[in-house]
Every structure is written in structure tokens, then in C-alpha cells.
Length: 282
Ligand code: NAP
Image 1 (tube, rainbow, N blue to C red):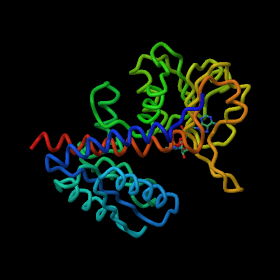
Image 2 (image 1 turned 30 degrees about the horizontal axis):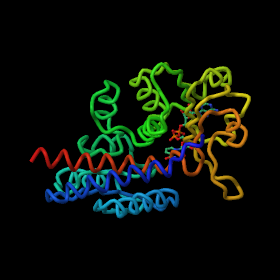
Image 3 (image 1 turned 30 degrees about the vertical axis):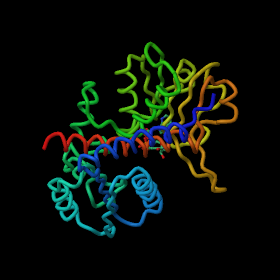
């Protein structure tokens, strides 16, 4: 089975449109503010996709652009202002930030109740404790993909390759919260193939094309390929040798059209939830 991330994201989009209509009937218009620093083309592309999704769903989106030489203090002051603005339900600072800015300080400055990216330590901590919070969008999207494809998580051996703070670590925690048995592999892991061959569910989030080849998986594995790599010929591929691994897999996500669309839709979901929460607290 090919796990159709694009199709699943479209289904969720329909559900979110209904939720936005309900909120608008109550006089609440969900609002997402994206802060973008510098000229990184990939960041601008990601932000454009987020803006388009907001438009389709009915979320009011606002983009604040800064030159790469903005000071950290000025950026923090803007975040403080957005924290206090009632019309802003979600604040997203597009990463990476220029080197002279401490990204952690910026993420920590965002009010956790508006941190729709789910990167704030309060949200990560609540997720760790399995309490309601904004979950990081990419791993949350993976959980939705599995659930909506009818793939059981409980009791399965899930192997996560990659241990970043925004994908691998929260992914492993979310799978653990769903009662999978977890192995996390990273750059220092010895004999990666030994571990990946144990996987019932294999999530790969590294950023290296062809890292996972067919000899590294068992028959019937479910493969979620989070990686995105641009080849010299311009083609976008994941971390998994899709063609050959697909022959052994019970289910697999393509790149593009797998995890990518889910990441954006989870951001929309978090923004709408934030708007609903803010409306309830008034
Ligand atoms: P990252 O911060 O670079 O993290 C990559 C992780 O993989 C690190 O833990 C790294 O370890 C580990 N790693 C590197 N080489 C490895 C190897 N040979 N074997 C095992 N682990 C290895 O990247 P990220 O932000 O997590 O993103 C990972 C990939 O997912 C990227 O391709 C990114 O573009 C993609 N992504 C896609 C989406 C989407 O929506 N589709 C969203 C987010 C990310 P060290 O840190 O120790 O080197």
C-alpha cells in the first residue's frame, strides 16, 4: 500500500474548513503570523505553502519579513508584541534563523499557548508527559498518517532513524505514548541495518538520500520517509530507496506526497485549536 499523504491531508483539510466555519460563526477568525528572516529560498517556499494552506482553509495569515541582519533584540521585541495580540492565535518563526540569532531564545520567547509549531519546551514537556499540548507538526502528521491508514501502533516495534529535537525525538515519544516499543537510531548508532531490520514501523528522518536500502528492512515493514533531499537533477527524494524498499513493504510513504503535506496540515490544525482555546478562555 502506498500511504497517500496528499489525499489524507486533503481529507483533514475538509474537516478543518468545517471547524473554521464554526469558529467564524462564533465571531472568531483563526490567525497565524509567520515571521521570516532573511532570503533562504527554501524557507520562502515553505512559508508560501503555509500561506496557501491558510487561504484554502480560511485562516487569516500574516507574514512579517525581516532582513537577515535584524538584531535578536528586535526579533524578541516583535515576538513579545505578537504574544500580546489577541488576533494572533499562532506564531511561527521559520527556521533556520541567521547565525547571530539564538534560535532557542527566540522559540522560548513565544507564548507556549501560541506555539503552533510545537517546539516550545513547555509543549515538548507536556507531549512527553502525554498531556494535551501542541504537538510538533511533522511527527504529529506521521501519527495521523498511520492512524488514518489503519496501521496499528500499539505493541509494534517502531524504529526511528534520526534524533533531532523537531522530528526524531518527538516522533519516538509520540510512538512510545501510543505504546509501541521504541528504538531510536542516530549518527553514532552502530550497525544501523541491524536495528532497521527489526522494525515493524520504520520512520526515517535524516536528510540523506538512499540511506535505507531494501536489505535493511524486513518483509511487511511499514515505512514512513520524512527525509527530503534535492538531487543534482532537481528531483526531490526521501531518505529511503523507495523503488526497492516498496517491494518489501506492507505500506510506504512516497516523497513527495507523503509526510510533507501532513506537516502543513498539522500546523493548520494547531492554529485552529489555539483559536478555539483562546475563544473559550474569553
Ligand atoms: P536534522 O536536524 O539534520 O537531524 C537529522 C538527524 O539524523 C540527526 O539526529 C542526525 O544525527 C541523524 N543522522 C545523520 N546522519 C545519520 C546516519 N547516517 N544514520 C542515522 N542518523 C543520522 O534534520 P531534521 O530537521 O530532523 O530533518 C530530517 C529530514 O527530514 C531532512 O531531510 C528534512 O528536510 C526532513 N524534514 C521533512 C519535513 C516534511 O514535512 N517532509 C519536515 C521536517 C524535516 P546528528 O545530529 O548527531 O548528526
